[in-house]
Image 1 (cartoon, rainbow, N blue to C red):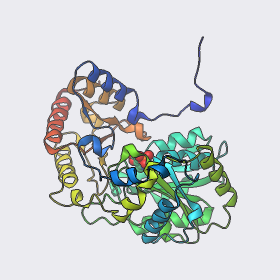
Image 2 (image 1 turned 90 degrees about the vertical axis):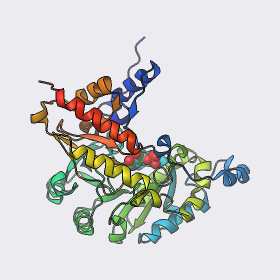
Image 3 (image 1 turned 135 degrees about the vertical axis):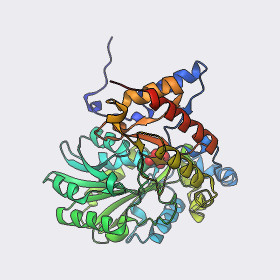
Image 4 (image 1 turned 30 degrees about the vertical axis):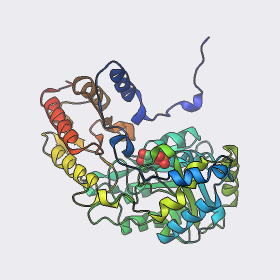
Length: 403
Ligand code: PLP
């Protein structure tokens, strides 16, 4: 008997945990230690999460029950207060949804929005869950360019050129995964102008908004658009190093006069999954009472800051690699000089690196980047491990050629 996946799965992929990562797991099972630089999972690298044991124990009666489909009132109030503190206007508690991570809310929000053939503008490179979820929902993804030569900021002219009568929404990932960019006000304002002119719904994925370094300032795009509907997403996976809790949220803000029907769709989808994990919701008020839990790791001398320095300096000194320094988040998206290095397949490159040097990276095209000339690196491991990775990568590239 042959069971085949549905046609809906065509062009749906998530390479961060794809076939190369599966090979790494197999190699580990067979006894080969692998340095995994594929997922932004801080606790797996020894970053200590806050302890919420008391909250979880004392509220067992509450958390053992299903909550309201949108989430516990106390969690939603804390979320509304946090997002309002970022200048986001007109947040009604009824328009705050908790989710099993931002991941679930991405899928829900696109399922509720997109008809077959509706277009959504998504950045390239992207966090690929967005592209996968939009396609699964029947949407047509149109990728707009983030420009490496301009600090990886969105190219506004490229966005403008790609808007059609079928474009329904635009996604901003700020701070960005995989590039580590933080967008300035002018760029966000230009995106708002385009959304205004063409009646686009704005999605903003801000899960790295509390992982800022240097002088970076995060501006919530919803704060610049009180006259537009904006869907802002965020969660505790990265800021509180709680990826495994699956604690995320989504807030609809601004001018919501025309979106009752969409909200109705979202409410049906939220109800169909009954509710999100209630333990993960129960800790939100305490977590958002201390939103900058990771602050110390991001300052000079702090672990994440120093690891970013180590990765950046190490990478840029490897012949054939150039890299824009991340200002936030957990990743950089270095460029390979593919002519000099004679590489024409980035997936093969990460596969061969894994087999020979036991380092797991993800290839740039996994982020819907269309040339085989980038990869993403996670700078969560300690400095000595990163130093080792740099040596292995440099050794590998000094002799590796694909043609
Ligand atoms: N959005 C971005 C940009 C991410 O990088 C990630 C995870 O890496 C997510 C969303 C998913 O986060 P969550 O753990 O809340 O599902």
